[in-house]
Amino acid sequence: MVTAQAAPDAAERRRDLERTHFHGLFDAMKELVAELEVDTRIIFVNRRVRDLLGLDVDALIGTRALDYVDPATRFEAEELWRKQAKSGGLERPITFGVPRADGSGQVFLEITVSEQMLDGQRRYLVLARDVTGRHETAERLEARQQELEASIARSRDELRASRLRLEDQERLAVVGTLASGIAHQINNPLGAILAAADFALLEPDVARREDVMRDALARIASETKRAGRIVKSILRFARHGATPKWLDDLGPVVRRSAELCRDYVRDRGGVLELAVTLEELRVLMSPIEIEQLVVNLVHNAAESRSTGARVQVEVDQSDSRHARIRVRDDGDGVPSTAIAEVFDPFYTTRIQEGGSGLGLSVAHGIVEDHGGTIAIDSAPRRGTTVTIEIPVRRRA
Image 1 (cartoon, rainbow, N blue to C red):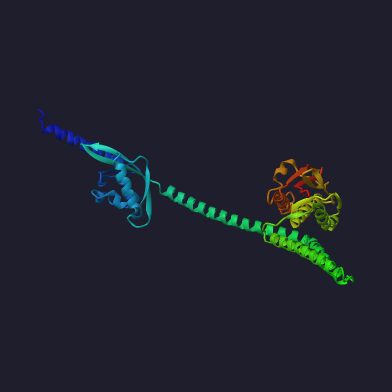
Image 2 (image 1 turned 90 degrees about the vertical axis):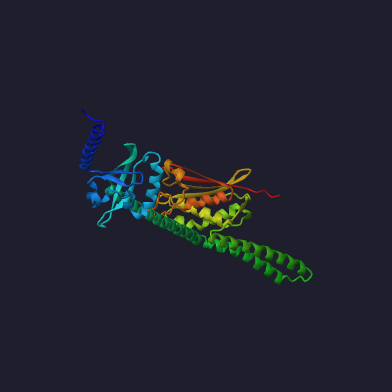
């Protein structure tokens, strides 16, 4: 006959046997397995803890598992445990570093926690997987990514510096080409000033001398202001600043700019043809920038074929509101797929010949600054035509 006392004892022995059986199974697992109380005190831990961390199994019983977490992340681990313990376990695996007992480094454990009820008491079953290799690989990848990002940043800075140097070289090349044109512009008002002064000094008629002197001084003042505007325009151009504009006749400016390029075209085996209307086309413009525009376009046209190109520069009035500059060549042309990119900075189809890809980009910016439009019509082996339209201003 089984007594009432014997039944609980048998049940307790059965639970002890089951616990011993499961503990034996846990000892055979490759993962670290532990049973914890609510405050993380260790009730059971399998022998894997000795292999992973070098810790004695018996010495761990009754100690807090959180005390073995890396001190650098212990506070974070405790906060996370308190928050998640209320919800019956961790919502997702977490990874923490645990120092080895011999001080040889850390083992990174991916920890999964589930809540268990045993004899009416809450327990937590912890399964920890060694992910040290994965963690170290991730750290190396992150370090490598940071190195690559730093390298990309350095390369970007170097590219930006190279672009600035190329822009400066392009501007200096244009300034060099325009040097004779600048001298011509300055010489014109200086010549007018000298002529007015000589005429006033040589006037023999004393009666008319006051009127002659007044006219001469007015002419000198006007031409001096004109020379000053030219000088300011050149200085602003050299400083990359905004260039002032005034009303001037477009035809003579374009003719003078194109003539500056005649030797360049001839030296490349080409020929330059000019067709400039005699009609006055008053345009609000910066002559120095219009010269730069024309020089860039004529240079591009002259370089459009290796055997020498025929370059035509035309100026006329396209309609009642616009003056038109057209630069044609009979060169190799531009593929249709590249037309949309020719105005992009540093895009060039002649990189092997040293092209910088800035000429058309600069031209586009100048035209837009003058309120105009620029268009390109080109095809392989059919040459290229660049058409610019700029608003004209009629006399009041």
